Length: 162
Image (cartoon, rainbow, N blue to C red):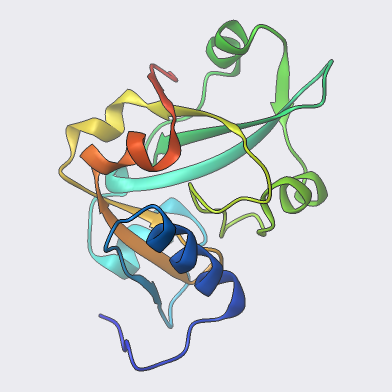
């Protein structure tokens, strides 16, 4: 699926570096087909949509704090459920805010390697799978990881997001 001799783009390389700093031997690959949406990623990779980790950035309404929700590709985030966990109302972050806090564009936001620490919530449904795929900095870059590694990698809290 990948050509590892090819140099990674700067964004994908920054994710590779973040993974390496975490001590995990996970490999970022850049693909010729888009992985921007969960459906595109699953089709390109050849896995179930539910195995795709969607990294969704929200912004709290009052404090303007970023919140990262790592959702299974088939699930929609119940914003009321996340609001209850966070303690204040949230809304979907726009492209500028997302890039400002993560350093990445929407469609390529990885679960790690952000510009700042972000409170992270992990969809409990992701833990049903042994293997997951997550964005790695660009709409064409991904990495494979074990669901058992997701919590340690992100310091996220496993919750029901539905």
